[in-house]
Length: 217
Image (cartoon, one colour):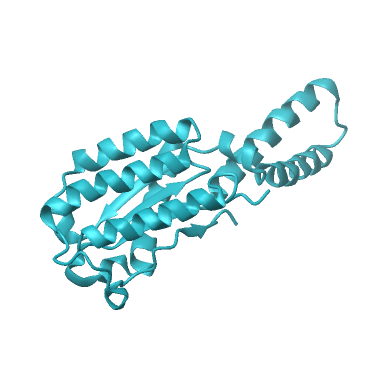
């Protein structure tokens, strides 16, 4: 199964994109929803696992077998490091070697990078929003433009992230996104309402389609 469809059905994806359109008809804000399979390949986690794997198995083997020459021990450790590197690239094993500080940093950096590369930071009046979920890390980031950051508190955004996390723990991804967009809409409309209820595609600066990405390789 396509990893995207394991998260959202085609119908749920359509509902979210329609909800983004609805959000933008009520506010003067551009919203981008982004779902990542992973935010980074985490080479450090791979090598940490490889080194730990090689040391543990080399220690165990030297207890069971005696080597006539240290060259064979070095050769064994080299082989185990290579094997550990290969195994460490497997997603479920890589997760074991991830460090929370590393996860927080990489997801945050990828969010900032996408905020810029998707040109959310260049929207008119600097009031764009990025709502990002990275699946491997189970991390959510919400970035807002400069003017929005002056109106919506970090506490408000943290509360939305917490509620979303609860939804995602139960694999209610579609429900979570729809709720978050509605909640953001209520907050944003108070400060930046759209002056017209009609849709003007020429003023729709960014696509309403969900942005999918995979930075695991």
